[in-house]
Image 1 (cartoon, rainbow, N blue to C red):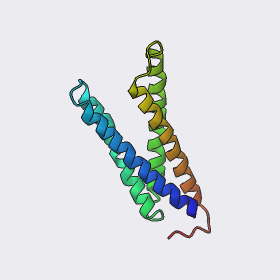
Image 2: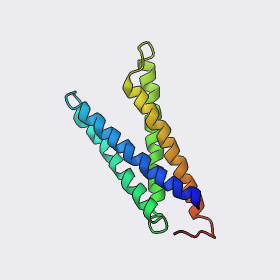
Image 3: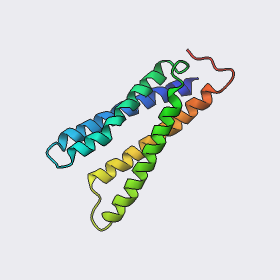
Image 4: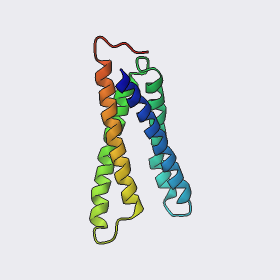
Length: 132
């Protein structure tokens, strides 16, 4: 029980930091072209901290969000991995820029959140679960 409590808090903290970093990047790159497209792709990420908050507060009540969270993270990991592979091939001769490094950090954090959600789901499915 103690491990899942830390996982829930860590999941919520990671999602909040992730959305703040995405918002900061969008603000700093406000003068570049293609900002609207970046905003459209970043907007659904605002739902993950909300789902993580509800999961952290009352896992029994909001357990229906867990498969949605899992599906969203799986799609995000697949898209980030695909983008990382494509961008590495394009920039293999140049030095890595900060967007590639940020994508790798987000990818590793999303892998953590995917593992955390899987562990929370396994904990919920135990027959002797006592949630506070």
